[in-house]
Image 1 (cartoon, helix red, strand yellow):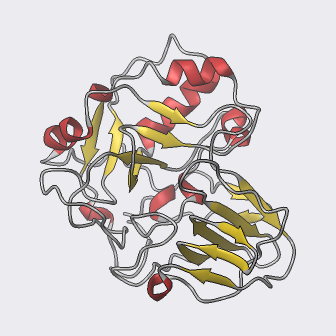
Image 2 (cartoon, helix red, strand yellow):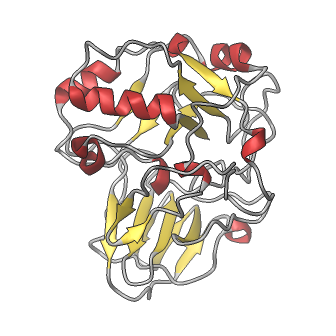
Length: 285
């Protein structure tokens, strides 16, 4: 049986990966992971925290229709895609220390992402960079990072206001944990941890099905139902239970405050082992 999303969330006329991609696959019917209690406790007894909201908070998405012409010098060049990137003066860079760029090439449906991105007198520099074909399930080489510590793309795990406003979020959501294990779970490709009792990169969590969403606003219910159906994917080290969305001033303050009230105890880790079809592909069954 193949797990597929009801619809594929698109952007700029492109799919955000195929319908049968891991990010677009529901996990509401999968078993609880044997390490669920340990992993949830390891992340910490904290409430959810939306890592977005307000005009300068969140990860910006840039849509480009220009041919990639910019050469980027990478600090971790051995695990970065050595191609030209569609970075321009108008490219939006995330604030804070991570300084991610997420750029969608609308002409070719390619996704370009960089981490620790800087404009210098000598040109563009970044810690690492990765490129994906948004129509493909191909993964990065095993052991390679990306703009995320898990070696995964950032875009498919970002909440976007357009989908929340439309009442349907049909994909998993990216989140962070303060410590992770020195290993990773498919389809993650890279680890950045040292605690064997902590969850590995690529671990997936979901909001328990019995969590009552009746008292929340419609927008908040949309997000919480997505967390029940598609869950959260551990993609980076960071603050406990911080989950990411696009940078836009359109996020309602009520949504942000309501999401902060959801306790971590309402989550469980999911055993995703049966989803895997191939080590080198994010196609899920």
